[in-house]
Image (cartoon, rainbow, N blue to C red; front, side, top):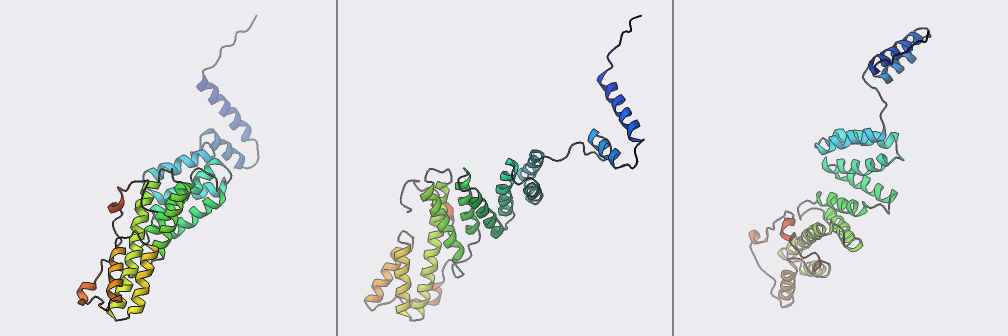
Length: 267
C-alpha cells in the first residue's frame, strides 16, 4: 500500500520544530544553550535577533527626530563602539555631534565635528560640518564687554565655508551669521575704544579705532570710528556724559543681515 503524506500547516510545523529542539536541549547539561536558542526563536526575554548597525541606527534616528537627543546620543555612541567601520558608524559620528549641539554642549560638539572632518575630509557632509562648527562658536558669543574669542572663531569658520564651498546650501545663512559676528567684534572694539576716550587715553583709543577700521571695514560702526578719529586729530575728542557711553552689549540679531544678496558685499 502506498502511503500518502499530507503537508502540515506552517504553524504546526514551527511548533513541531520547537518541540523537537526543546526535547534535544533537555538532554544537554546546563541551560545557557537552551536560553540562547529560546531567545533566538522568539521566546523568553523577547530579544529575537541581536542588534545590527542598521537597527540601532533606526532606533537612534527615531529618538533624534523626536527631540530626545540624550537617548539618541547613547545609541549613536553604542554604534561607534560596536560597529565603528560600518555605514551606520559613519552616520553615528556625525549625528552624535549634532546631538551634542542640540543639547547645548557646544565644546563637545565642536570636538566631535572636528574629529569627523579630520577622519573624513572628502565626505560630502563637510560643508555642513564647517557650518555647524561655526554655529557652535556663534552660540557661545557673550556680551561685547567679554572675551570675543567665540565670535572670532565663528567668523573664521563661516568665512572658510563661504570661500571653500561657495555653492553650498549653507552659504546664505553663513553670510548672515558671519556679518552678525563681524559686527559684534567691531562693536567690541568700539566699546573698548570709547572707554579709552572717556578715560582720556586718546592714543590707545585711536589705535583701537584704526584696528576696527582695518579689520572690520564693512561693519556698522566703521564710519563712526572714522569720525571720532578725525575729531581726535583735530583736537576735539567727543565729550559725553557717562550715560551716552553705555553700549548695547548684546549680539546683533543675525536676521538683520539674513536678506543679503548671496553673491555680494560680505567678503
